[in-house]
Image (cartoon, rainbow, N blue to C red; front, side, top):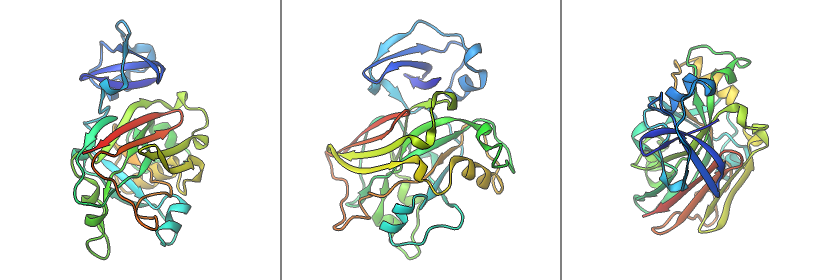
Amino acid sequence: MKLAMLENEPVVITGTPEDLSAAPIQNADSVMAAWALGAERLSLGKAQTIQPDQLICPLPESRQVFAVGMNYAAHTKELHVAAPKAPSVFTKFPSSLTGPTVTVPHHGTKTDWETELVVVIGQGGRDISQGDALNHVAGYMVGQDLSDRAVQFINDPPQFSLAKSFAGYGPIGPWLTTPDEVRDLARQTVTTTVNGQAMQRSLLSDLIFSPADLVAYLSSIVELMPGDLIFTGTPSGTGVGRDPQIFLQAGDQLVSQITGLGTLHITIA
């Protein structure tokens, strides 16, 4: 099941990216409420053809947004840092969240891209075992962890959360895909293009800490709640890791995609 928000109404998405249809959910008022009911209990209206840019942020009400740094070995190498012994976690403030087709104002001259798998918590809890962790996952989305490197590296050690929490710096979507819809998550490919040029490409199998690892680790410290988001980290190919470094400019077209999960279209203003 693919759940999205269309003009402030939860919908079930069907069809292909080139021919999308959305059926309004008549007995739920949010994506998470629809997920909690389950597919068999949803009351659906008549499906209509839609355009991808009609979809808005699927989970604006998320209370906790976790983000994981240095979770791909190749990314640690491009930044010349050691591979983590445990997940390196910070937060993106929820006010940064936005939808899948957006125009985002960039701040300063060092705005960078980070396409990521986002895990959505369904059933919350504490001290969730690694073996049970995926039973607590409602689904998956594509996320773009836009980052202002000037703010991030203004001090030593760097600060992450503020640098990644400007307005619009957390595009997510285009919909929540439930786990039963995803065939072999680890084999899905993460890609980023800027103005049509490939910048990032990696398999999700390259994650150092898997979604199950992250759910178990986070819940050993923090109570997870329904609708919480986990940005699981970005592959190599970021602008800051290049020589010479490259950053986003006004007018750039940024496309973030994960096979099987969808695509984000971001215009930098």
